[in-house]
Every structure is written in C-alpha cells, then in structure tokens.
Picture 1: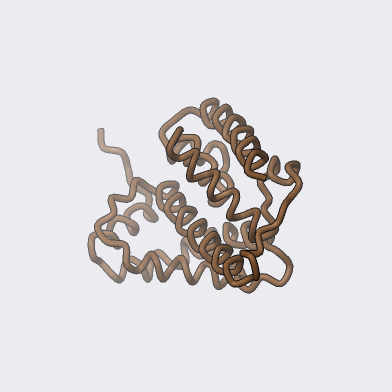
Picture 2: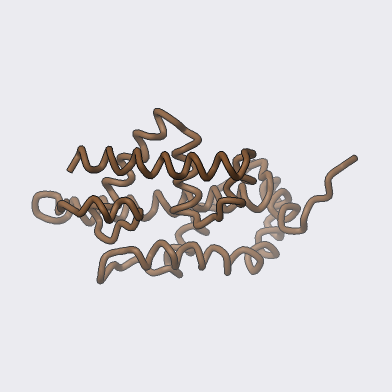
Length: 189
C-alpha cells in the first residue's frame, strides 16, 4: 500500500527535481513557519544585532535556491535542513562580529544561561556552536536533536518524526545533550 504524499512534500520533491514553479508554489506554504523559526532565534540575539528574522529567512532562501537533487522525506526533513542553514548563518555572523572586535570580543558568561540554551551574546552562540560540533563527533543523533529543537524550533514529536525515532528517545537525548553541552561550555569557560 503506497503512502499518500502531502501537497507540501510533493512540491518539495518537484522543486528538488528541477521544477522551479514548485518553489513558487511552495514559498507561501513555508514562509510563515520559517519566519516563526527565525523570530525565535533572533529574539535570543544580543541587543542591537543586525540580522532580523525576515533577513534571516531571506538568507535561508538564498541558500535553498542552490539546493539540487535533495530527496526530501517530507516537511520535517525540509525544516530540519532549514534549521541547519539558520544555525550556520547565525554562527557565521557571530564569529564575524567577534573577530571584528579587539581581542575577538568573546566574553565570559553564566553557566545557568547555557542550561536554557539561550545565547544572547555572540560569544555564547560561538561557544554553543563549538560544543555542538564536538557533540556531533561523539553522538551525531544527540547533536542533531539539539539542532532541530533549538535552532529549528521543532517540537519533540516533530523531531522524533524527522529522525525516525521515538518521542521517548528524543526526550532522553535532548536532556542528556543539554547536560553534556553545559559541562563542555563550563569547562571551556
């Protein structure tokens, strides 16, 4: 029995297989969700940051335009990819701002802030990204869960669906990954 594909998933497949009209049809379907994801991330940014939610979404679109031949598994897979792109854009911008400051501009921060994974300063976002890259080497699934939940704003259920694991696995790995990240960042601090 063949599983029915949603219209959004079909548009993703059509677009990935070279149909540019599919992206035009897909854009209004995904823009609101991308904007919500971006707003959640940019509100955690430092005061006076220059990358607003709309600009972040536009940067994601620019990166997505070059995506070719991706076998999208569905909506969750697509938004997981967008979360990864948003992470890269925000971290690259934070690294650039930090590099432009005298001495790199990295600052010490309260470990309790990291428990809530809310990097409001450039240095915090860079430290989180460095620790997440280290976690990726040790436990790719847990690193992916952090990326999907934190950067992508996916719920536990959506994350489980995107990764093909149980809700219980995501809940457990999310908790363990946050604890591990806290330990790594506090050691580095």
